[in-house]
Amino acid sequence: MSASASPVSTGSPGIPHLDVDPFAMNFFADPYPTHEVLREAGPVVYLDKWNVYGVARYAEVHAVLNDPATFCSSRGVGLSDFKKETPWRPPSLILEADPPAHTRTRAVLSKVLSPTVMKQVRDRFTAAAEERVDALIDKRSFDAVADLAEAYPLSIFPDALGLKPEGREHLIPYASVVFNAFGPPNQLRQEAIERSAPHQAYVAEQCQRENLAPGGFGACIHAHVDEGAITATEAPLLVRSLLSAGLDTTVNGIGAAIYCLARFPDQWQRLRDDLSLARGAFEEAVRFESPVQTFFRTTTREVELSGATIGEGEKVLMFLAAANRDPRRWDKPDSYDITRRTSGHVGFGSGIHMCVGQLVARLEGEVMLTALAKRIAKIEITGEPKRRFNNTLRGLDSLPVTITPA
Ligand code: 4IA
Image 1 (cartoon, protein in one colour):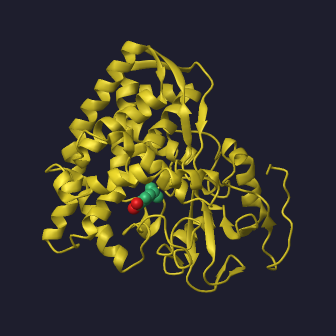
Image 2 (cartoon, helix red, strand yellow):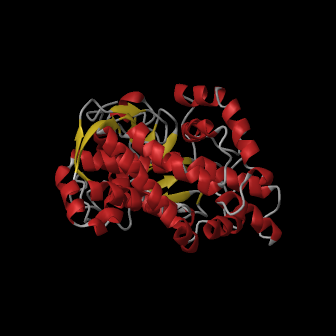
């Protein structure tokens, strides 16, 4: 599929059918021309390759996210419809749930990852960021993915959760399976699931109450059992949500920010001149790169969306990344501008399912970008960036850089 693919109208009247595969390697390599095709074809499109509806404009993505009764999550937020197929793992009690079940589990994770808790971990996260930057300044040349975007979250998040030291090498591979599994049954998904058994076994074991250190996010989740908010059976699955969604996302979020700031030196200079822009620089990177590219919903009834009629039980693919660069919503959508008013971007989703861990993500991003900008004058890309291919996550496998200390 390329930018030149033109929409052809067949079947359902008024809805353009496209033959794009948004889960193919050539799409991942450069999704932007196809995002434009998807947005310009119409407010709602149909993707013949996977038999799903698609929305790529900001208004429709936002509308779908904010009507969870019509566009439900309990039938899965990947291509697979849980009403028709057995999920590859027991469904998430928060991501793959609808109200009222979702409301109760969401409240628990919301408390566990609250502003008060962020205040408690902030100093530790900051010290670890400064330590990491010191080590990178000693190296001068390094891989900004392995040595920074991965190394930093790995140095704080598993500890914050209360995980034991052994077996942490399973965390990123497990998350990679989770995000590949949202996609269609292509090679990425099938191979990931085939190889997932050791990662799943590790995660299941770490979610048990006795394996989580006191005071950590994991123990805090289990403490809500004693209050009666959740059952002892539910608690390990909610810990699993943090293991699934809390690490690879911030790896790719921080990776996105470094990749942006390395490519756009004028923005790096603005950040260095005003460190209070660190939070905005991270948020704009989440909009600009959209580490979580896509998600599905399933219709619970026949619905009309911007003039298109969608029947019951249909999968709708939301292109978060395309919405985040929709020229109908954003000025100069393709420029990375750390002073942009980013509020309303859908990189963290929107509505009742909007990222419950967003405060953790923003804290990590802010303290890392601040630590970098304080001590580094220049970041230069010194080798070919290599892309990492995943059905849902957008990010790099490696980014060779050389830094100049301030
Ligand atoms: C879960 C959307 C993504 C960040 C996510 C992945 C997994 C889970 C939640 C969110 O397992 O609950």
